[in-house]
Image 1 (cartoon, one colour):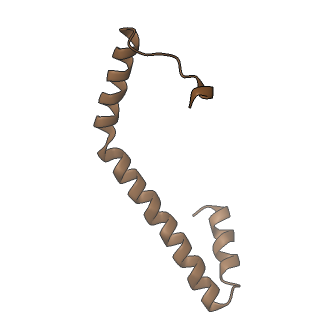
Image 2: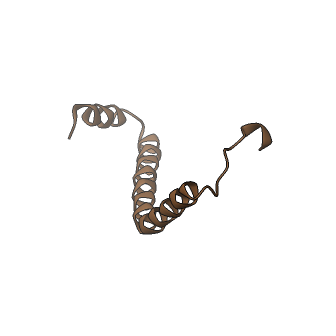
Amino acid sequence: MTKLLEEVFARATELPEGEQDAFARLMLGELHSETEWNHRFHATAARLSSLATAAVEEYRAGRTEELDPDKL
């Protein structure tokens, strides 16, 4: 465990029980969200790669145009 994480846990133990539980739920939610994002990203990596390849092919074939932010 890193020193910073140790400090966070040490400080969290000083909180009232209800706030400790709220903090724990928040951290667990963040960890779950990160895990879910990683899973979804890896599950779509092949699709993203094929879209990137198609975009490069369209660019090289001259079938793209420069984006004008003022026209968005």
